[in-house]
Image 1 (cartoon, helix red, strand yellow):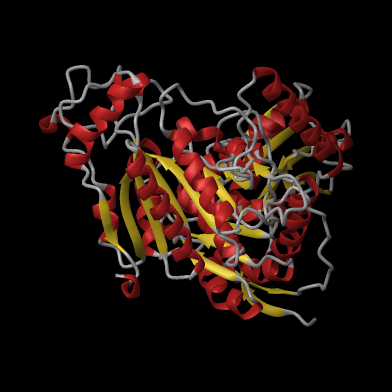
Image 2: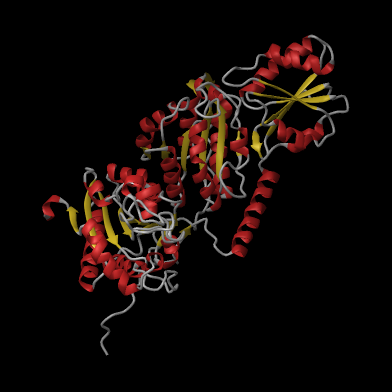
Amino acid sequence: MAVVFQKTKGLTDKPFSYCPGCTHGIIHRLVAESLEELGLLDEVIGVAPVGCSVFAYEFFNCDMHEAAHGRAPAVATGIKRVYPDHPVFTYQGDGDLASIGTAEIVHVAHRGEKITTIFVNNAIYGMTGGQMAPTTLVGQKATTAPYGRDAAHCGNPLRVSEMLATIEGAVFVERVAVNTPANIRKAKKAIKKAFEVQLQGLGFGIVEVLSTCPTNWGLTPVESLEWLEKNMIPYYPLGNFKSPKEEK
Amino acid sequence: MAKVLMKGNEAIGAAAIKAGCKYFFGYPITPQNEIPEYMSRELPKVGGVFLQAESEVAAINMVYGAAGCGVRVMTSSSSPGIALKQEGISYIAGAELPCVIVNISRGGPGLGSIQPAQSDYYQSTRGGGNGDYFHPVYAPASIQESVDLMQEAFDVADRYRTPVMVLGDGMIGQMMEPVEFFEREAEKTEKPWATNGTKGKRKPNIINSLFIDPQALEDHNHRLEEKFELMKKNEVRVETFNLEDAEVVCVAYGTTARIVKNAIEICKNEGIQVGLIRPITLWPFPEAAFEEVSDKTKAYLSVEMSMGQMIDDVKIAVAGERPVEFYGRSGGMIPTPEGVVGKIKSILGRE
């Protein structure tokens, strides 16, 4: 019988620690498949963040560093400067990357570090229990915004991809979502492309992945996918913000 | 090699490169700027990498990344910058990575001053970050000793998989002295734990300080503790001077110890015998040296360029057997031999 699908070698056998319906599992698979298909698993060094994906080092089947909160891009810089020929990636959530780690992500792009960042944006702090993130939508309730995010009080949500796309050293910037099979296929394509850009030595690449958090959004997994489509995508438009010139 | 006249900061950089350090990540802060400047000029010549980070926080995390790759790596900063690095130092200690951190310290608290001070004793020796950890702290008193200890620092860091701090005050960084670089093979240490790609030949290596299971973290802390005990046993360095007949034994480190030696000379000429214990490692603290003190000694005097920090370790070492007095200047004010002599005389009631 022909094998039509099997688990990628890029993931270990460790069961995911994610909540039911969380899309981290899909994103992990897309990253791991990309690494396997590009033949990078034996060489790649990954950096896990602090947040829900803090245990990513147990799931990706490659050398990994666990970084302090927000510091993954700095850790990845240290690794890449030692091993310029090894692919290096960070996997970070929106609290990690868009709040405490803004300096690190801006400057990893500013320096044009040849690394790939997978940025999982679910508009909330998941692991600590649903607190407001810089990416939380206006009106969206969080445990530290119980009346809904008020723009007059704490500003409007940060659009990271648009911001990073203004930086010269960021050569590949794309926002994708994993709410439908079609979008998942597009996400996979973008992630793979981001790694290819790194391999070509062109500069910094980031894929922002709109993701769900059923537990902290207080929705079922299916409702969460719908909520993402109706609320997140209008504010965080999908698409490529930057690609190496010859590819356009 | 012949002696050359060098500024402390540059000599420290040169010594690091001779010790096989090829990677430097740092951020500008006075009075240590000549270290990153030197490294930016010299590291590319030996196939190394100098990178100016966006902050001290980023710099120490770059060190974390590079150290996890198994190479010799360092950073340098000064007091407020070291405070920013403490998070990373805690992670490096927790993940058991070797690296060297140079602190050319200045006055505090807060922005403080840019003048020499020794008020970083606590943040250097007490594990300035979170958690149960210590790391070796070397306190050179001359440029020559700074150079010698840099090599030692990298070897000890590799041997124990630990961050090592070299703590020089602003004077060490800024003054010039003749220095000789002794050629010495860097200790070779296998690093099978390093992340350099599995090559499909081994299981993934993971650099990590997270142990979510309480028992696992306690076991990890016990392992770290065993390492700290081993360092306490093997890595203490101290200079003792004139202890035999001393009525007062001064305890001082770094450039302050040189001022104290001048004070001891003045006292000798006036017929007062004074000794010195100079910790070269602030951690592990040279407690055993205090057992060499004779029955003639009436008191200890901790002399520091601070409001009194090392005096706590002196009191622990003395364990209540004799009085422990303090003399210090702070804020960038330098103790004078005459000031120290005055304090010694007042302790002995000979004003």
